[in-house]
Image 1 (cartoon, one colour):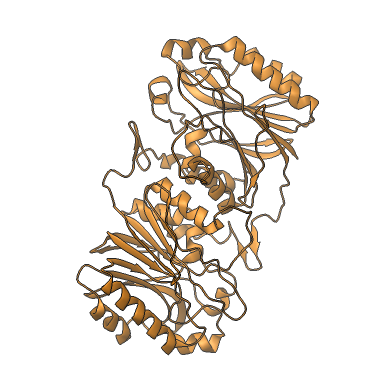
Image 2 (image 1 turned 30 degrees about the horizontal axis):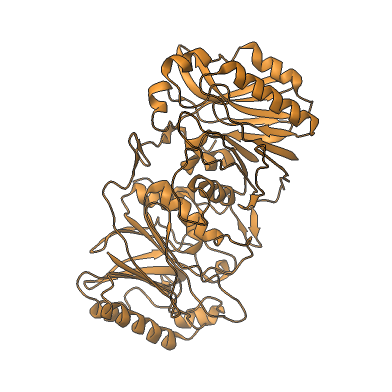
Length: 264
Length: 264
């Protein structure tokens, strides 16, 4: 399966410019015969927003835009994109899963980082596993990935790939090390033998810099390549039915001992 | 707190030679004023054993040896060492936690790797969190660490440090990457803001080579140094009461949403 994570540089509060950027990214992916296209967290709105900007950029899940994007896709294609959502009178940091058939699922981020808590409500539901032409796709957003229960839960519920739109603020790390969030992703991928695709953002936004840590991680826990100058990371991933079989006598999911995983 | 992981090279089936090696390691640690000394998995017996060898090397938890080791320790010192255990008519791949006051706890490995399953029974109990002069210490053995629920469970139950006697068979990895098990440890440490000390073994045993991946990981998820030529990795670690406070508005354990971590 042909996969692309496209590390865009959304502009804070500039909905129209961001929608145009997303539209271009979809059209490029169609031209390049990508099957699974992943775009960053809050791609429609940017990240470091004032409340009034977030409200002005917010889209409801029934906004015609999602159907417009669906119409751009080919029949076997899946798009995952982060957006600022208005719903039930609240704002959410959400991700949409879209196929040619339309909007398939919206996930509302459940673990909010830092000042997001003053803009967004926490999602009230577990992340979805969405059956798509590109397989069973689990969805997380950014900080969600740092809770090992989250990718594990998706794998146990049948996710073959977990997709993570993200905006990772740059943090210090020792020389030669991957960003810490990428290490979390590599460990989660290997633990559950599940591919994980993290699409970060780029650019500088209101003085904040980003990790630009976009990573496609195989079900063996290792990384595929690097983004090109335009922020695109393309690869082909294979989802083997035998992927949890990690040794002649071992299976990463069946070897679990859930009765022992006590919190008390 | 002064910590040492000492990567020994136990000899398969040679109990007396291994006990002597362990004795030496304890005496060195005492001389060097180490507070927490961690030795490998199955340090008393070696790893690639025939059943009769495992039986011959096996020690019961009431063996006088543990009290002899206890007497070597200073009053604020803790020793964690893997051993081949005979108990309840079965063999276990176990780890002992020993202080000057004697044997404090025995943990029987609950996730068995590969041919271990033909030698050992699976432990039936969750790993302990042991209150010691070196803090609240959680215990895992080798493959246990690859189940993210295991270190998480220890952190939620109050472990300040998790100690992992291990024997990691060498596996291929991309150039420049840490061993996969170390990546699992780094991710687990960061996710729960808990230091993790993995003591691997060295030497070649019956044609099998080892990762020699001994790693001391801080509660921030980053590694401390490398072993010296004798297999010792010494460092000082500090256990901050504020270690789970990972941002002005975030806490790695309190931000959890356990009601959403469904397996179905």
